[in-house]
Each structure stands twice: as C-alpha cells, then as structure tokens.
Length: 305
Image 1 (tube, helix red, strand yellow):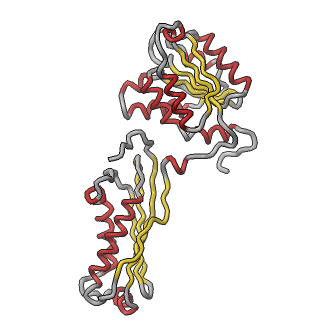
Image 2: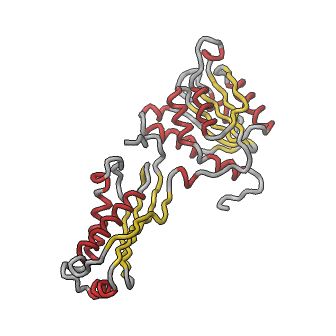
Image 3: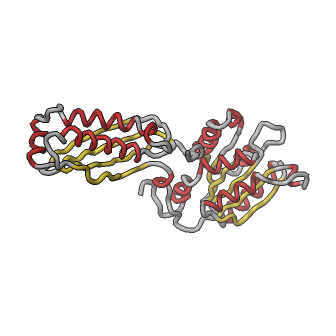
C-alpha cells in the first residue's frame, strides 16, 4: 500500500458515471417501476452507497477513509441508464476510486435487475468526470522563478563542532519543489546576528523566501523567534500553526516548537525547527501552498483572481 502519511488532509471530491445500455421498452418499464425484481432507482442508489463504503475491502491498494458525503443520481434515457455518483471526504487521499466503485456496482445492479426482461442489456463506459482536492488543486505556478535563503541557526554547527543535516534537508526539499536555494548560511544562536542577516536578505529583495532552521525550542539559547519578531513587519500565525499541527500528527513533541512566520517587504520569513525530521516535515506542511502567498504579496496580484 502506498504511504500517504506525508500528505495533507484536505477536502476531496470526485464524480463518476456508469452507463447501462438497454432497450427502449426496458427504459420505459424502469420509469414505470415495473421491473419484476423491484424499484431499480431505489435499489441502485442503495447498492452504489454500499459499493462506495466497501471499496477498500474490494481493492487492496485503497486506503480506508471516512466518507463524509455520497450522492447517487439515476437518469433513465431512451436506450440507456446513467448512474452518477458523487463522493466527498476530508482525507489524505482522493476519492475517485470510491466514486468509480459506487458507479460500477450500481451499473451491475441495474444489469442484474433488468436482465430477466432484456437479454441485450450491457454495461458501457465507467469513468471519472471530475475530481478535486489535494496537492494538484492547490499547486500554483509562480509568476517568476522562486529564490530562497536557508539559514542554519546553531552554535555547534557554526563553531564546527557538529555537521548540519536539517538545513541540508530543507535545501533538498525546496529544490525538489523547483525553488532555487540561492543563499545558504550558518549563524550561531545569537539573536542580533540572526536579525541582522535576515534583515539584510529581505531588504535586498533578491530572495522570495527566507527559512531559518533551528532555535525554535525551549532551550536557553533558542532565540530565533525573538530575533525574527523584531524583523517581521506582519506576522502570519497560520504558518506556524500549520507546522505544529502537521508535526503533531507525528509526534506530540511538535507542540513544544515555537516556530513563527511573517512578511518583511516582499519576502516571506519562516522559522523552522532544528531537527532534521522536524524541518523536513515543516517543509512538507507548507509546500506548495505558500506559493500562493508569494503571488498575493507580489504587486499586481489580487487574492481570489
């Protein structure tokens, strides 16, 4: 089974249809409710709902997810019956297979109910009409190439007593998203030095993003949030909350992080935890969503357009 634990929980929707071809007289019998086995419309709706809920029991690679909404519509035309199934769930993976399974099982039910009176009945196309939610929907192409600065905040790394791994991980993940890391720096846990470097980078406006890595914990020398609050012009509380919420699903220790984020001019500043794993998770929590924030901050772009 594919690992989806790194995906964000979002609202997922999908619509699928299935077609059953029938004789014109069969379609008329269905409309009148005269099929010997019972009401095709109501039985098919119930069957589709069962199919949606049983999808992970039928298909081994489908994850079991909570279905928050399901709707089934049946349209009887001259020579066919069309089943339309809509499924929605707040989950880490999409629901198009659930919608297709519901539509497929519904088509089988229509066929089973009408076959005694129509030997020509047969199932036609089953397909997804639309699907929404997840990374694809929220991925936005930047107006121009994105550049980032990564600043490792660590006394030991700065003094050459330890090797950096967290900053390197952030760099790798950013580059995997097409973001150029044009500047990579290491500074000690000294608030004035942190503030001075971040201010310098932002005011030059050559980088769109500044990520500090480290100094967000509860240690005596952890001063990154305090340093950045003097630099940030407008705080963006949701980004810090998002990093903690994403990490909390993996370890309760994430609640001890004091990560913050904000804006200075046209540069977005994000303070990330200093452990390699926590830093990687923080990048995963924010990308590619923050590209939208950069577009809103850019001149000439209005939110919602």
